Length: 87
Image (cartoon, rainbow, N blue to C red; front, side, top):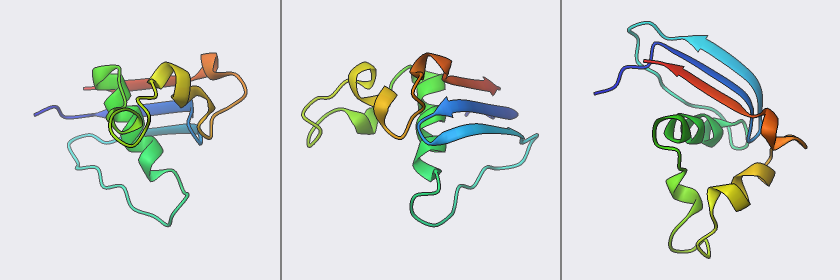
């Protein structure tokens, strides 16, 4: 199992900037609709695998992350996006 000690997300999907030290604690993601929960999970998956599974496959018309992710609630400059994990 991978243990994330620190996470930093910048300009990724709807998240402008988020940095949290987790230490040895578990991470729970909860909140109302539209507050960025999926963006956090997508950022972690992207940092670990280079892909966002839920943006491809059945029901998505096989959209690629490169084609789809930059404009999903993102900044006007997707090249500024950053996801950094300390594991």
